[in-house]
Length: 51
Length: 227
Image 1 (cartoon, rainbow over the protein chains, first blue to last red):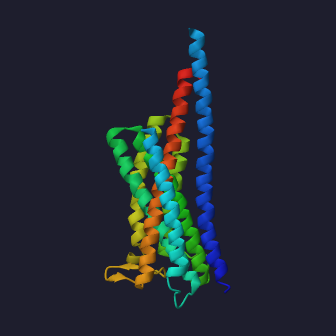
Image 2 (image 1 turned 30 degrees about the horizontal axis):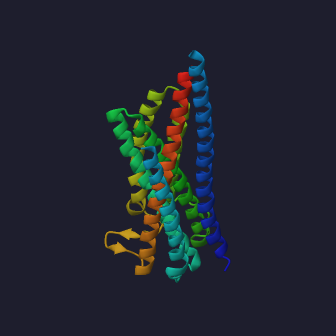
Image 3 (image 1 turned 180 degrees about the horizontal axis):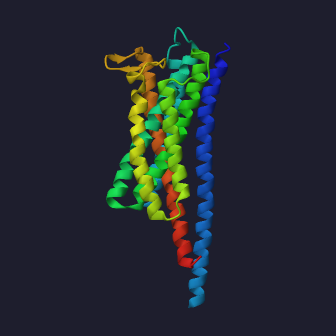
């Protein structure tokens, strides 16, 4: 029964690392998408000011 | 093209999530309990699968690195980098779950067995791949150096795989030339887990590649704005 702690720990390592990887990618993707939107708006505003 | 990529990444994400759930069912319900080690032997299914994904990811890096050196296309550099990040995450899982298993089987968390030693070297080689990339500013030079690292570093993969066959070791050998040292339900579970983890690898790879493409888009827009 004591060994179940090790089994739990091993599977916990898998889930924690998988979620950490996915969470990191998702957070960075959201941040980059926001940045792209802001840059596109800035680019459009600049083009409008030229005309 | 973008919506096609989104559909592919959505499909891979859902398919891998379902496959991992089925794999968990097989590991904890379908596979029989091993006679000597008991329930803790079930660590083995995810331990071997994560090792497989790690090796496969580094193989993809090898191919992408060679393609980059041949064609000089940024896309291949992105694939090589993304695959190293995914592979390193999975090799970390392999080493940590192996260490937990070792505590039960060998009564030590760590020993400098050939397989454990070569795995550590493998981990360090690919960690240094990421360090090398972060140390070089110029994009083309960084990609070229990283590609060479990705090709040369792959030598450590077959050495790690063969370590338990070439040298005296206490690490179990599952895949032998005579066959598998497993019962049929155990082997079925292991093969299913390997398949599920391969799907998960592709799902993570596609998302990681997309991330790098977005970063490139940001750089291009900044360039247009003169920032």
